[in-house]
Length: 473
Image (cartoon, rainbow, N blue to C red; front, side, top):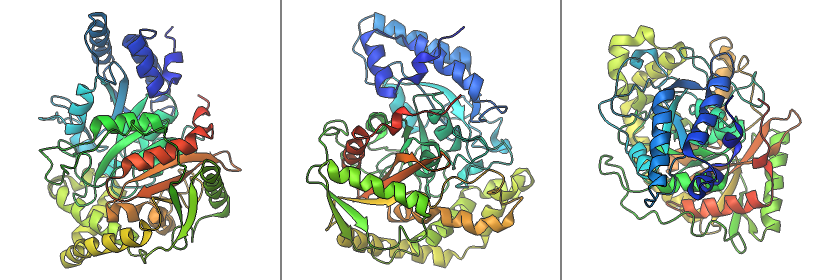
């Protein structure tokens, strides 16, 4: 019988234990594989797309052999991870949540996976996702819908659904996801874990499935802010295969992670973000502000420029660019797509290219005004992530309940603006509502200020113990 206890460690704890020799990579990997097999399948949380047990164990044995040889080790040496099923690895299938790609092996490896390889991490499983990453709830009519580990009748959020569920259920120490309209932050919030969407261009996107080149960002989902910082440190930086990748130095997010928030200006929006939020969610999010204030932050109300159009414009750009990115699938395999995916791609075909071009042209001016107005007054902006507790899988299935489509679009009210603006944002757990489901707040900052976000989020996390609470198996 495999001891699953090592899988309950945080990523930082596991990395330190492996480095110190108190835990082998093989023991950590066996523990994660046991939980992935027991909890990740279709009969349980349905968050595992595929795993290769023998390859995973081989990686772990190799990592232990390197450590035994006394060679200098990178920071994530021997730590098992698993990722959203859209990051290619040469010779391996990445199905991207669709049956169409289920048998196609990749001809290249994603830049972020190459960076994690160099950091010493193991890649032991592919995790389920919304088909072609088109959806914020987590529904997938083709691969099946992952279930929330806190309540299996509830959504995980999407499109990085399997990543958030697997991390929350302690199957894996951390995972990469993608965020085009909230697809890292929203599932992280639904599942009670931490999710970081970096600045547009901060993390390279080569060798991964594109959805909207103007909006796509890749980032970590993990149990703690420190874990997220470690993963971000590994993947941030220039990617020569991604034309949108920034050459700006990323710095070390761990250097000032424990510096606290004394004197840091935390902005509370005067308008927009709280407008449609349910009282039970708003109450928990506002309590997190008081914790940051007690930790030393200067809490300031800040004006918000009119960004109401950011949500629908993000939906428009995503639909249009998604239809372009998957035009070949639409022409040859449309009948094999799930109905929600097909519907959104068809809407993208109907989108007016001139309107999309206008939206992208206006973006620079909108970003400039937003940053000048908001971040001249504060260092980080504090908002909700979700409008309401996670709904049930049944009630949020627009195939069975078409009336939910408007509510689904509204779900991105707090997340999509930061995709449109290209700004970094992080989702942080902040308690549980009356139904015992997780709630979260969001911090956003000026471009390339991920390290400030992580520092502020960590200061909050030190004052609370939400990250220690885990769902029952």
